[in-house]
Image (cartoon, rainbow, N blue to C red; front, side):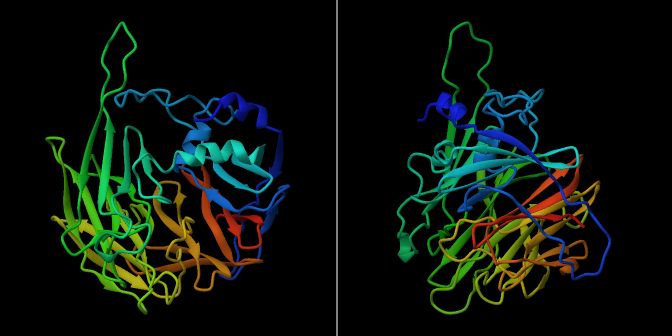
Length: 382
């Protein structure tokens, strides 16, 4: 636990930096603007992450509209402005949009690290992170070397849901239900953060599985009408390259095809040839809609989120992610299944700590990229 008054005391200042204006141009573009920070970035979390939600709903920042309610049925007044959180030795910062400007709120690094510590719940696999969406959280638990798996892998997927508290005259603890799912006798869950989505109006969780030293795939956990979670589908394991190949990396989950149901963007061999894949789920099974090589994802043991959906104002979103080698940022359309690049932006240093998108009214404005040399840069959304 940490003292939020200490967090408040760690707030240092507010500055307003201009957000790069979107512009039409060729596929290869070089408009990248540095975000001035008094520290080198070592970690980054985008909108929707545990850290970003904790910071935005803490009541400490002007970007927060209202704190989230502990009652999972409460919906009014829980919306918060999207924020991106970065930190490193000597400082941290929260970035948000203020109209067409990029606003930077400087925060002490120790304050953000306090929020980041909550990413790994009690009993979770050490070094792993949980996914959080309203009353639902999902994370990995179990032996870190179960079935010969690599460190950071978990034997089971744990799902915790806050339940309605109801009307009470006395303070009571919010009731929580917990359920665990295992991927099968020959698989474990790989050390990748699960992602939460919704299918047919009900919560669902996508996680990565590992089989042996080099095989990995996707698993979908779905919540039935009776409230019970089941492992609804898995993809066949895909082999990487070499005995120490990184497991499949989850890039993002969104309705990239415009069908009304979410699809899963993943990267096979994310530290090698980097094949971007689009998976659909229908009739109780996954199907591969399309794929294309030449993109990068996090290596084994790397926790950076190196991809993010790019909202397009009611149109199917694009996907922003580094190309193989991480020397440029690609903005890719997946509407037809196979990747089609809409823009490729050279970066002044390799992408390393994260890719995140800030939008206003459902339209992306700025893409932020944490670079290997500690800089943070802003790229105008195409």
